[in-house]
Every structure is written in structure tokens, then in C-alpha cells.
Length: 324
Image (cartoon, rainbow, N blue to C red; front, side, top):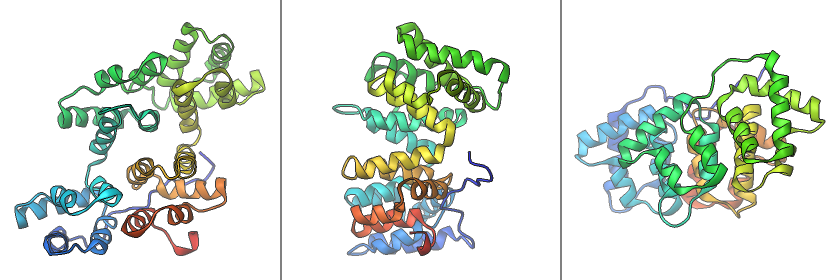
């Protein structure tokens, strides 16, 4: 992290929160003839996730109806994806995204990389639990059957959530860096295994030291070395872990930028990152985005999205007009 950097999200608990009143307002917005989408945005993007869950309970008590079900029924397209996505507790949202990334024809490997390369052990543990509860299926087994090769082995390793935490040993960092360097030179199956064990199991603090030592030994940045030596999704996953170790908000800024610019606005990715990071580090992600790419995230969303979908995304981005 950069010195003095305070990591922060864009959505906080609303003061003077009244779930019963919110539920009644939402009922009016959803049960009527049309649908007051502006009101939905005003309420659901201005409450934290825990508050939204309380609103859903109050809604059920007041109307005997499921709020998520009503949102799904009344809304459509990407706007629906945003409003429904906001209603999932974070572990359930990750589980939902992973399930849909693997279900049906083809697999959305980038979604698997985004989530599994960036979550903490605790987040992974809760996500696996939520996945099992929601889909009566084992996340690790599903990943195993939907992916292949060293990419699969690495994802399976990450989903076990056994990374060391807070531990760093400068004495072994040089040795670890030598192993990494050799793995980039040799590229055998055995070396890929060594890479996997190191990047999936060592603490962020230890890996930071290792990457610095790697630079000293090889005269090359570890990401450049990975890009030269490996290919496909295995390479993408290796690079994602390195970027998350270095600066997680910068990783997500990069992912948002490529989702907006390289794919002609890859809606699923943009929605997922904004919702998943909204209470963690989205404000910092916005800052990195502006620093790296010159344009604000707000500006780029405005350019590519429209209507209530655009409004909802911008409301989650939050912040002052001056930031844009």
C-alpha cells in the first residue's frame, strides 16, 4: 500500500436508519402500476448491506413478499443485476457470481480470477459456505470439474483459503525469490507447482519482500517475468495475485479499466467489482483509476452506460462532483 493511504469504500451505514419506513417506500415503488426506479436507487445505494438485509426482513413482514423476488420481477437487464446484486450478503454475492461463471456453456475464467485471487482466507471460507448453502454443491469440486491444467490446480489451492497471515521472514525472501526466478526460467510442471505453492500460501507481507528480492536478482519486475514465461489463464492468475499483493485497489482499477475499454463495457465485471468493493475500498479504487488512467471512473461509466443503470452505478461510486 502507498504510505499514508487510507483504504475506504463508498457506501457506509445510513444514519437515522428506519428499515420499516424504507420497506414501505420500496413497497410503494414496486407494487404500483409503474415502478419508481429513482426511489429504488435512492434507498438501496444509500444503505449498507447489513441495512439492506434488515429492509428485506421488514418488507417481508409488511407485504408478505420477498423483496429480491419483487426486484427480479419488476426490473430488467443490467439495472436489475445491480439492484438484485446489492441485496446479497457479500459471501453470497461472491458465491452467486462464481456459480454463474461456471454454470452453462463456457466458463468466465476472469470472474474466477478476480474473486479467488483477491479474497482473504475469511472471505473465502464464508464464500464456500454460502456456495454450499445456495447451490448444494461444493465450490472446490465445481472449480475442479470446470477448469483444467495448472490454472485449475492453482484455483483449487486458493479456494482452500490457507494463506499465511501477517507473517514475514526476510531471511527466506531471497531464497524464495531464487525459486521464483528459476520457475520463470525452467517452466516445467514441477516449477509451476512451486510457483503455485508460493503464491497461494505465503502471506502478502512475505510475498512483498520476495517480489522486491526478485527484482534485485533478475533485474526484472515479477509481472513482466510472468508475462514472458507463461501464457493463458494460468499467467493471468499469477499476475492477478502479484497485483493484489502489491496494491489491491490498483488491481481492481486495472480490471475495471479493461472491462470498460477492452471489452466494449463488460457489464458483469463492472457491476461485480462496484458492488463487491463498495464497502471495502471502492473510494480508493476510484482514486487509483484516476491516477493511472487520467480519466475518472465516473466519467468512463457515464460514457458507456445510460438510463437508470448508469444512475445506479454512479450512485454506488458516490463521492463529490469535483472528483469526476
